[in-house]
Length: 491
Image: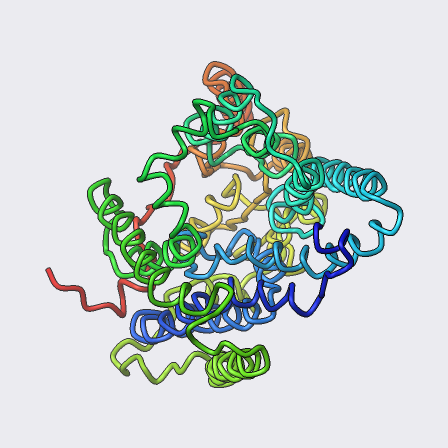
């Protein structure tokens, strides 16, 4: 902003500084990920990796990962480049903010402050609205995260040409607010809206109030803190790939000792990257590729090579030939979810129209076409896997599957038509009842209420004269089951 006020601001010089800050370490990490992805990822995993690699190179990875949010999406912990979503948002912000500064400063700093504040508040409001619409996609969406960078921009405008305010208590509050989410926030908490005000507001208070003689500033000036700050960007780049590949390779869930070792490794590699990759390209007189034209040319060549690798993996379907023939066969969900003509639509029609859909197919099936079912598999998607076995085990009975994405209780709106269908079925003899028990209990967060509603539901089913079989949940694996089929892991 000082350059803009002095009339010496250059968009090209600004982007050169950004490129020297961001690209060298990023390119090294991306290149280093490719051989490990090749060695350890299954074809479909490698395909997703290549897509994410391409999206990182054009700084749209947040949009890519937003599109990957679904019920069957791979776990976040197994995606090596997931963390680059925040880098993408940052770079998208810096595409337009320098232009905004140049325009607004024509009317003085006050206009820049007002415009930045209005846009920041608008983004915060949009983020809070987005959480209520689709929290998972909202997390990655550009306009939902701009406000956090906008707060930093407001701090820069307020402090332009000035020293931080001497407000030691407020600086200490800022430090506490910045650290609080580490201990208080949970994975289930929707994030990016007002909840993000705690750490973002804490960081703003530190920037505005932590003068060198305040307690907060002295804490942050300790050598370990300064060291972590110096290597923070490189450590950020390497940590997710290290943890993701370790989880892909491990047959068991990583324990605390392993996580601590991986954290130390992230800091060590972060230091190496900072010392030997970041520093040589930065500063007033960079040691490597000091001229602007040569630097941009080299970045373009490396970026094009990485993009070529991503496209090659993509067009070759993840190189399935890497897996030997003895590993052939489908163990995922494709065979299960492609029913074809094997089963008929369930009856009555009211039940068929009320069930959940998956990829535009109604998930209400019946093993025979002759009349209403005598055996019904009832529940959410975790009951669905029982249908095949029950139908094949009772070839002389009409077995149906009534599945809905809700808690299968009497008072659940989505299940009302299904319970009505059961009540009107004179042939009903048996109900196989199952659900994702842990998830549904967590959603309701009321053990007493859950038990009461479960008892009422089972009581009604028994009151219909049906035998009720309550089934526990399906098995959960610490690692990805398909990977176990391919991997040869020592020990």
